[in-house]
Figure (cartoon, rainbow, N blue to C red):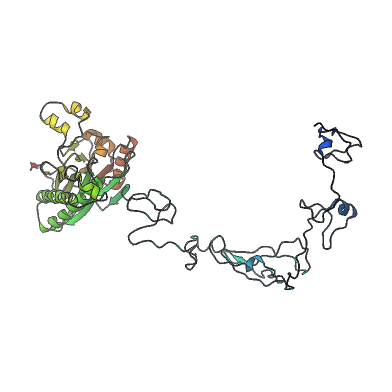
Length: 490
């Protein structure tokens, strides 16, 4: 059905507020269809939601009792008594029970009809005051109620959890079960045995992702690398006193075999056990080379024990222990009384780099690997063997499924000062030859072993960080009288 346009009686356009003339069907400014405007209501409400007075009241300047000037919001006055003729209570914000946003109970209860006086002195540190309201008891009805004095507890206690009310279950920190820790992300959930928060699911940083340790004359750094989801390397550095009182410095580095179960546990057990055996044997006067052999045998036994008890995988792992037992490689070095002793099983290495870089560096270990066997048998040269995809397949390791344990040990008597670099293949993959390792090692490595170890780890990460990276540095000082070099393989 079509509609006829009706003349409008409006004085202004509802769309653009431009003046209208009697009889206009459309606004001359914006084209508003004036016939679509509904006729004005007959009543004039007392309260207008948008804050303007009713047309009649605005024209006369009058309004309900207690109203402000024309154009102000005219809120109705609250009844003094309720339907039972009981005085209606008046609540101020400070009188409402509960907690504020920091978990602190609301304070500053003020009786109805009373407002706090302005502070006479300076506001203490951590407090703030809102401006004092008008003191007249008959202030305008539309004025906001006065707020009591509020103390800001956050300035003195930055941790809301620490200032929470322990009796309030909403703010009391959760009780941590024995042996667990709180999530570093949400600070509310507890970390499960798999390393994830039970509340938010956030993976927790592992303590072994990056580890550094420095003693007076030895330092080591281990890093997870850029590709692996965990660090399966481990190290131990320490020092002991020989029977004559001279010091002996120890460094052990182990690399977990990733294809085996629980390789991180294997490397940790091997490094700790080997270090403990050396710390016990050297003070008794055991020759460092014999002590190193005993340490590797004991480390192998410690790794073997891991295959006889369930790990994190529980019963599911038991069926695969014999075929895939925990395993790792090991390399260690001892510097004592002008003697340098190294021992190893697997493909972790030890290098010698003299302080005087005009002297030749050397590799002190031979890998238990497929590539080394090919070179030893004369079937390939070193470049060809290590370019093969089978190069890093190890032929010797610590573990219950190892073919036969054959610890390698060797002792040296360098005739010049230098640094012993003990590392996993995560480093030497990026500095394989002794010459490459000497170029990467800082010239002041003997005086700054920790910094130099950090530089070597950084070199591997800059190269791609495809594996875990672990390196220990032992400075070697030659006695003043000097001595010839000696090499006695075992």
